[in-house]
Image (cartoon, rainbow over all chains, first blue to last red; front, side, top):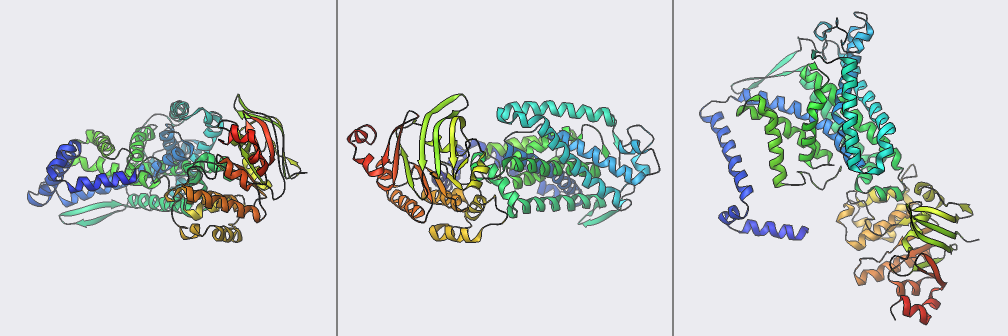
Length: 377
Length: 234
């Protein structure tokens, strides 16, 4: 198969451009559209000046931030997908759970003594506690943010494990589809338990005064605030951590072995149940942290943030090649950048549509995703 | 008492019974082959010993201990290695990582055992950093055997080691198995290539429809007119 595909590629290159266009109409149309967009972009930026470097830079920065959060959540989803063989639709609500659990702790640490502790822990669900008043930011209340971030990971790992033990484990032999449907049920249950506990309002979480640095761009500046840097540093550190785990540690190698071939892992003497446990712990922790970072970056929280993000996370994972963690990161950044940069051409309301359109286009050309065949490793 | 004793074993998968009162034994350092037609349950014997088929009755004893229903991880700890037939390497793990997985139950990678595996299969050392899935069929088979040897087991179960190999590799593979046996590891092997297997083994079992049909020294099974005609193709 590899040989024939290499041969086929060689032949295609050898033929003239015209016959390529006839044989591969889809690719040709996509290439033309891509060139038009790129051309329009370059002309607007350099010739007519309709587009500023600072403007593009700002969108790209926002896209990168959003992409890193999506990618981080995607790594968690991809790990559980490749090792446990099922698409976990409750993943989005794990993101929300991580956000609320973590921010509850952040509120508690930042506002201890200033308000009722239960109210703080419920992220101000009972009223009378406002994020802006607590002045939460990485520079103002560093301890509160860091402790919240860590506990967002820890509690979500616990939740993921609890749901697995209580619900998924007994169904694991039933196959991917029953598990998927169950996970949709878990998603709804979890979402409305969160809505009942933390209420349904959208509320601001951070201080209005976050230190911002102006990065010079040719025709202006790009604003980067301290929380952007926290998202960047945490996401990159965690992704490197996962890379180290999978490539260098015995547990990580066993995770890759299980993703490859679960039956073989079993007869090789790998304690598969323990590996599953750790997969939920690691995947859950990454997911919880991504929820915390999402709120840190958006500066608001509500009970639907994870659910709304889930489709984008799925797109990122599918785009990158399902099962590949590097694909998930890469796919996340592509989705994030598309969401933001598409606003140059189309209204913001359609940004999500453009991200999904891009996913469809990439899958038409590379049906197994960009990093296909590099499962987990 | 034999190293491995299988006594009146009934086994299968779920509700489907495949083995019906199978008796078998492997002595210390002995080389035993199981042959028979397709669907006779040859592989099921191994899978039951290894705890991945459904045990329905009878006993399996290893080194004097009952292991009838132990999980694979526990069976490995007793000193049995298993090389399944297809898909027997982790394709996205490197050759070295594949071997490391073979010693998962130990705290550290046993360097001495790794050295021995590399000496036995020099090609694996050459390809140490290459992904398992990029190896040829013969090399994958060697990698799978090497992985099972990482814990220096007393008995290795080999499920059709020659399946899908080119003719010249088949010969090499059987020689490797002979060497492993000469170095003191007992072998229980299922083989489609019955003539070659019976020629090389100490004893053989002919399994038909989940039951013992014949057993005895390999050469004598090979010489038996009836067996030749019914199971070895003339």
